[in-house]
Image (cartoon, rainbow, N blue to C red; front, top):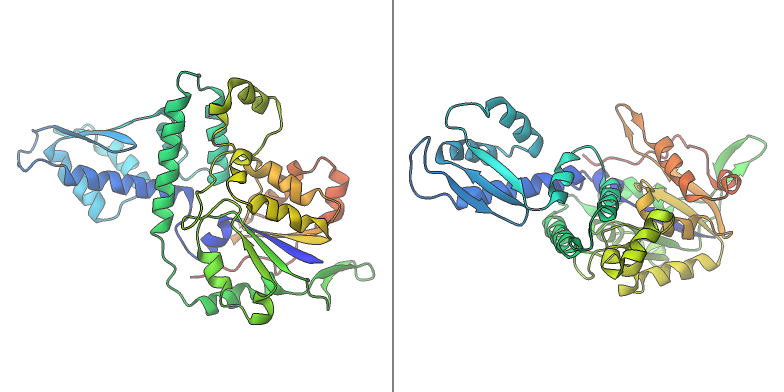
Length: 364
């Protein structure tokens, strides 16, 4: 039996990397502040000299008095949340003049959900916005969404993992390369067997190179049996796939009827830009187990997850979870997986019960 390991953003986050959705928005905000500072006129006149500037996301309007406040935000690395709270506090002060006007309605949606939703939820928001976009506006929406993808690639490409990768892999080695667990009816529990998987097939839903870099330090006996599938592309070699991946339901049928321009960022129409999806399908022809590692399993990847999890050859599914101060996300991931299955009884037969040592290590 082979092991298919689905890697989500929870893995990059466990490396203590700033790959949350809010981190990306904070970077956009920081780049906007820098642009405002760089475009400031060379004159000092508190309370006067309004000026305007713009980037791909915002029209900006402020004056030189407010510029000092903007410089302070930038130099101290304040995030968007701090800015929004601080702006409300001082907006009525004399001479205060600062506004960020979104260039597209979706910019407002993105920042309205700052620090609330994850990437999968944002892809769901994108889909919902598609449904209310008129044919006359779809080209503009697609153009802007392409900018978002380009900026996301630019942001992720600037991230660096500086810790020792061999030491890091040691934290995950037991999870990735451990023996297959079987259910012991006598003890009514899952136990590690003496059997190793025939191969290790990593399906990386992230766009970053960190998984590949870290696995590169694995021992030869594991490395020779390891394959990494960058299913959503990667920022170095393939265009990233960022959009929506649930083709079921009446809403998707509505988009199909509206024409091809509404389907440009539907994941299934982009999987064929490479052979990654076909390579994954080939792995499903023989028995396998599935490890869910830092992947939320939300609706945005529903079709791909159905393909992997519902096949008869899928013998069992093991969920690894993040444990925080307010509990862990095992149950939430489990409920998301339940939406993948049409056959709930079949799902219950495949899910391995929560294992006490299956919490994902956090690198500090």
